Length: 259
Image (cartoon, rainbow, N blue to C red):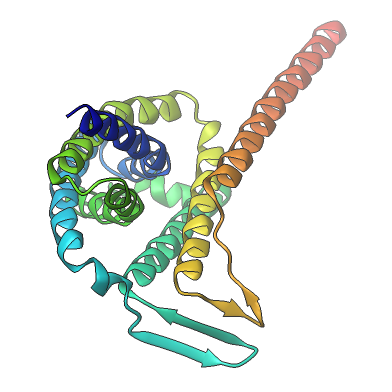
């Protein structure tokens, strides 16, 4: 029992670490709902995803080998080679969609015409947003569930870890969303981090597929590299924000002297 409890604690910690990028996606996606419905969308989306994660766990326990067996091959010598399984294709699609979402939102921010259209348009369907949150949650779930299967074969431990991890995500999702709402300047940073998450998933999918481009193997971006880049982006954003504030103070002081 003690060993199971220690494994459970490790799995919950693993869920929390692997769920950071998922939280960012949920926070950005839920903004498309009417403001008074955003918290409801986040909670319902994560709640449904918890149930589907548990179902996915049961599926993976029984058919894990089918997810690993290649069923599609590319063999263009010295150009592109690879062998794709269900797992790698799911990660490819998820990573590509996240990159598309990040680029689309960044474009909306820098385009005045697009921004005006968004401000004047009705919010996206709540059902559509919840479905997207659930689907992307499942994409992000694969790594955590496969890691859980590598750590233990005790089913109840994995299920409890998924439930606790989901509850933590529900608790944190509102706080992350409220922080971004109060600090709009960090939204751009969040979108670039989301873009980075998509790149990380694409490289992971390339690694799972043993993909080679022009003779070079695609290697996955590991979590250490991801968090290092994330820390650098946050530091740059903080320094730039403070520098901008100082410039505004200097300009304000000069304007006061002239008056």
